[in-house]
Length: 209
Image (cartoon, rainbow, N blue to C red):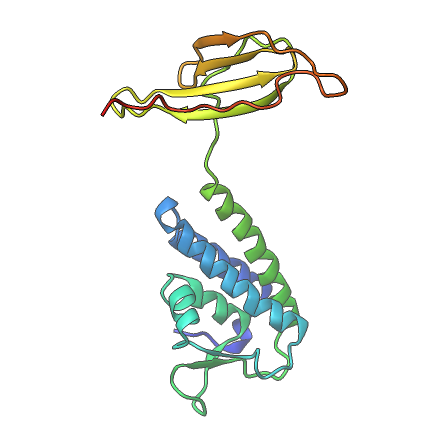
């Protein structure tokens, strides 16, 4: 249920955004929460920029985007309420409006800042954690080229990596274990060119018919 207009304060916005985040905690809700926060932020950004614009002080909840990204997300309508949106007897049932001509710019800006911070936190949870799976050693200078070739045999799951380096060597490794493979020597620096092996490629051995 929507509260009275007088309840719209910066503290109310604090509580609304915190509730939005709490009701959508967990990795499974992160994508929906991020979309809701982004949509709400855009609505409040428009209000903060031009609070007297009737277009920005009116939201149709049956709009496809609003319905999917706001109405369907627990707690998201509470943020609109905190911004001052209310049902209006003079409007269709699916329309929320901010009754006051200007609204509360302080609340709009507060919500904008809170939602921007929320987006940053949620986006961090969606970013995969990278870790070093194997260290490939043996070169004595900068590596200039890398090529990767998964094995044809799904049972082994072998992944071969080839590297070319400024030490004029090309090497192969097992990418999963870091175990060294073959070393290719004999490369030399051509006249008026950069030193080292600057390109490598891997090809599968043709299978017998």
